[in-house]
Length: 533
Image (cartoon, rainbow, N blue to C red; front, side, top):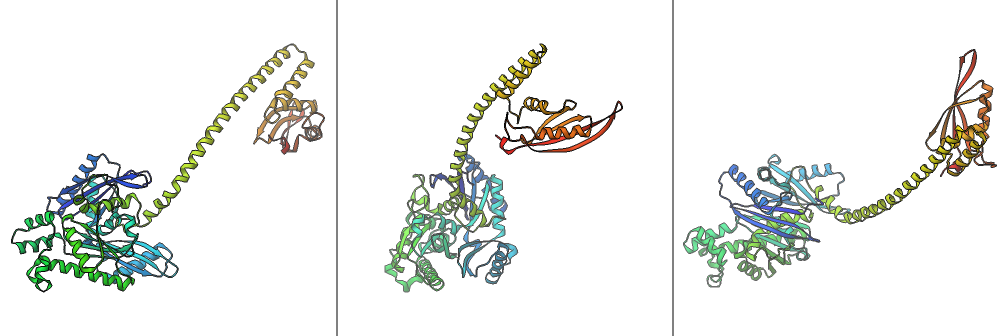
């Protein structure tokens, strides 16, 4: 998720598929493209295949095959409840408690429902948890469609929460804010503050039902009435003439009064459960009917009513979409924005619940620190590489100088001038040698102190602080002389500091050879700590 750029949000309606593609833009998100497709299939199987193919086509058209997706499902297929519980430690215990509460409050078989929850607030005395359930068949339908489209689906959220997450954060600071989504078949209402949601309702009285009563009033077909509503909105000019006592003679007025009654009921529920009143109402849904309905609500309830537009959603639209096109897309916009901005939400995806949102939210703050640390490590690595290259060159020069001196010693060895050889050897090892890493210098020092009837067969350095000496002594007495001689070796000429801190006989095995007893010995000598470089 950290390096994803494109996010696809889609909403499958009764007769239409709505798709929005967003990408990250600085600290926010911007719209890349959108599409609305009329669905023609009747059966669920054909409808699922049609949705998958249309999604695949839209994703391919915009070239965002690497995008991740979020689907919003109709609120009428979901049930949401806010629960107040005592603080609970342990995820498994909390889930069991929430499932029990859900079964007590919602009389629906859990085997037919997908369950999710979101911890909205947690204190020392209680915690506020939003629980949600969605019909399992709806979740499976969305999963199949996303699989057919080849889309990496991450979230499945209720459409009402998607609309809430689409709104700019600045508009949700008013406590309390009510968002109303007037859809095709239902009116969804959500009341909350910032990222917390307190009341969610879905009322089966959408644009289709309004078009039906308008068709009865005017005497036209439902399709013509719906077209008239989308073009001209709701005509409230007859309200003052008829009055509320004549609402039975007007189906449209009856619909409006029922809508008003549901809002009043919602306000009462909010007042009883939270103890506060709604201060602001936001409207979204089918664009043409909203202006007159917002005017109706403002007059009847006496609250501030705002209609969503491009400046009120938390997405930079770049002028790609008009006002009437934007309002029906709010759910899809909110779905994609939930994913892009890592907004905590109910999630009906199998095995992915609220924990999915926690890590990215933390990563958002840790990423700049990790990036700076990586840059520092790269700079340090380049500096060390330059120093290592320089040291490697110096070491090669030193090796060449030592080889030249050894070549000179070999040539002088042929001349059999032993005093000259010893002098040159002493000069070479004192100038270039390192007793810690040069066997030639160590062999020279040993040859100067060991008894003449002792033979050395092998020298071996180990762990940069030890040397193993193997050889042969004619008797155990000579072996004692060898050990004492090595212990008496000094670190420098005329010095008093011993070269070795410890000399241990690790092996001494006697054997017979030509009538004589020979001792094969093995010594482990440890350099003094002061010798380390």
